[in-house]
Length: 234
Length: 83
Image (cartoon, rainbow over all chains, first blue to last red):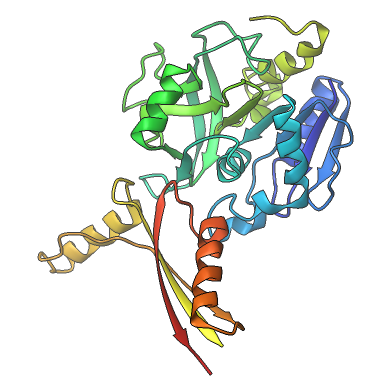
């Protein structure tokens, strides 16, 4: 599995993602410059966290028009894997690969702390090594992470089983207290219809080594790396 | 030259936490009559085009492509002639 990490002006988790893939997984990884229309033949594109284009106008609004995004759209349309983390998730909604939008946290605060998530599906390339309904701990770090969508879209996401991660409490219960940012239905991550595009607000790359306090995020990257071996883990 | 003023606000069904915070602040400043506050964006776009009609058409396009996100935002456009 060859990974590519897109670098936008203002990305600040690109090096973390690169590090996890290169040093922790020891898998091939390339940086993909936002201004190039070249994905360097990678299998999985990562849109990292950060503040692309300074979050000007709206989060992710300007990044979606980067030349590299034309290729990311083609890659996704052909079934290629794409994961957007935090700002990457925001970009995926702006470009239309995922529905809904991420808006300002009701607290008006930049929230930077660990959250518990319930893994709703483990039949995806991104989550194959998690157990179904497993409770994991992955940090969030965002000011605009409140997931919103109209009622129809929300119903569709639930009906098609496209919610991949949900904020939960220590027992896996989905409730208001465990929801850090007012996201509808406690949504922390969703996928597209085909399941090859994932967007999530929490940062798996920040908990992929024991020294950083946990390995729950590493499982996601390992799931992806292992996907090439045979694929069908559903 | 034409100047388009675009006003962007959250759709009614989208929570506007900034608006709520300002709303509360106005109440505590002694304005109990305030019943709702929405915080939005004001964008001025000056265009070198030949007619009001073209200005409208172009700014509408800019709104749907970039300036507003139809999932969460509504927008209003005002176009005027400028020197």
